[in-house]
Amino acid sequence: MKLALLVFALLTPAAVLPSSARAQVAPAALFARADINNDGVVARVEFDLSRESLFALADANDDGRITLSELRGLRPEQGRDRRRRPDREAMGQLRAIDANNDHAISLSEFRASGAGRFRQADADRNGVLSGNEAAAFARAMGLGG
Image (tube, rainbow, N blue to C red; front, top):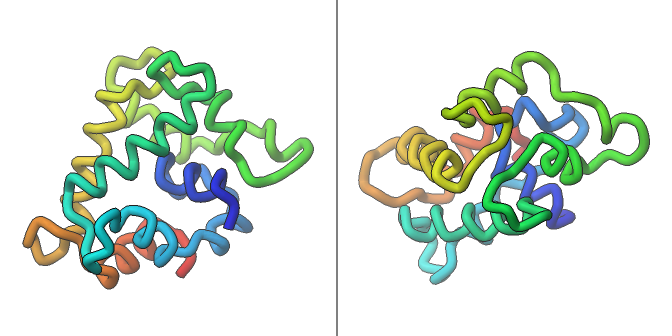
């Protein structure tokens, strides 16, 4: 799987991904990338570090913010579809992350969205994500696996 697709999947709501790309996202690959110490679970610190490294990759101009044009640059499609604006649902989800409504996602906004995602995924509330929890959460987000 291409790194751009992994970055896109972790940074954005699943609804932003076109349906053809959703099927290509392997939750196991995302989980393995986040499990930095290879202990079979992803602690909150690993989750945050993994997401923040991907934020840095997506922030093409290194200004500490991810804009819609930078997100479009991560789209796995080629040609006209790559320039296509996300649908209304996806834009709503992106706006929900953009707390100050400046049409960009700052690192602090990104961190806040990650905290919510981690809490949602940690079904047994033990402070770490198992592979099963991560896969179930990915399915709930509409990602393949």
